Amino acid sequence: MNLKVTGLHLEVTPSLREYIESKLERITRHVDNVIDISVTLSVDKLVQKAEVNVHLSGKDIHIEATEADLYAAIDLLMDKLDRQVLKHKEKQTEHRAVGSGESSQAQASL
Image (cartoon, rainbow, N blue to C red; front, side):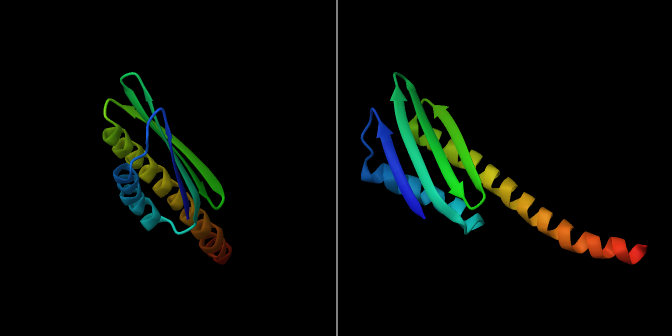
């Protein structure tokens, strides 16, 4: 997994980078096929914005979150990302299960 953390109009400190990495461990626990993650942090006056682009095998996910505090924006971002990754994983497993299991049962009933 490649991780790129970029700061627009702010410096990405080592503590901020470690905080992001610790939050991303939750995401990588759900899926193993994470290819690339790009996190962009930006500041506009009083608005702190965090964006993430996650490149999974077969899908790209883009999420944005804004808050008054940068750490709160990162927390919100990771919650949204967690839900999207779980949704993607659920769709993959449902698609596989329906494709193989349903067809053999449907033919047996005919």
